[in-house]
Length: 328
Image 1 (tube, rainbow, N blue to C red):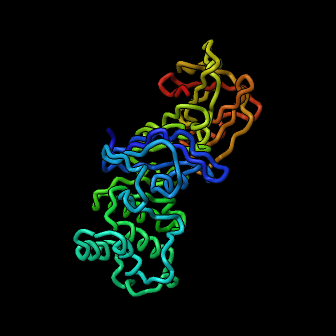
Image 2: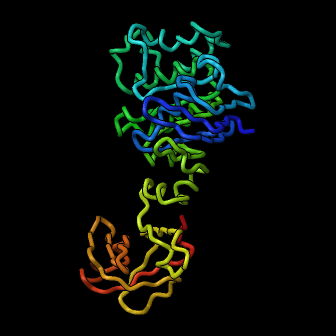
Image 3: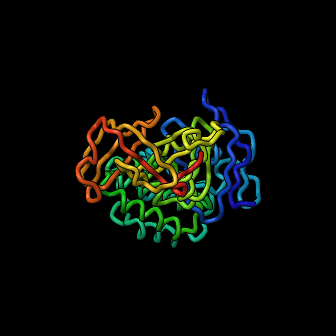
């Protein structure tokens, strides 16, 4: 059994339904839950943490924890807005979990967290006097001081200045490894997911639509909904390729499509279409080509083509190979 197994988990929170969630996460994996605002990401974290009533089951290391109170689940939770206690200073916030559980090697752990997260000068500060980045470090330290087996991070970079995001992402990876964690991180940011995740789950409207290795999910969506969410262009019915089964669709990367004006293309698939628009963008052109009332989006490098290659309204050829197609 997986280190963390979420099995047929459902929960109705107000008018929102988390519907039959199934996820398997291995020990020490960094799992990113990717979805738009309102998709149920935070609600799922809260349900894992034991803050919402639910049906189904959650197993940690083979033991069902869905019947346990939130304090006994060995879960650390860092909310998007950090949820620090305003009546406690930084040190008191970090040590809060010691009020309800015995912390193994508490002094050594506290000292390590303070040094690693660079909190030495903040310990006696009031929460109201901290910056967003400082609050984040305190919230993470508080979660880690409880010695969780599983760390839940709710949009941890949303309140961080974009200029610091790269360093914070590296810090999250370092924390994950240093404290022997299994982490679930929710975000709507593809860049975060790509950098941090061992595995990714896509959630929409309270349902998990796809899970898998990060590179597989980001590059090989299993259905149209996921492909569109991930920003895939060129999603067309397979009938365009001459296949009889019109129930399937395919997508092709705009960067792998080549263009021509005569019959020089030798790709597996070649189409004639009308160039509707060409836009110059720094080092490349964006072409929009109509093929049988389907609009292809194509990127061509300026160093490989002179000008926009053809005038708007011209008939051109486009082509791509079978290996560059993903069926969804």
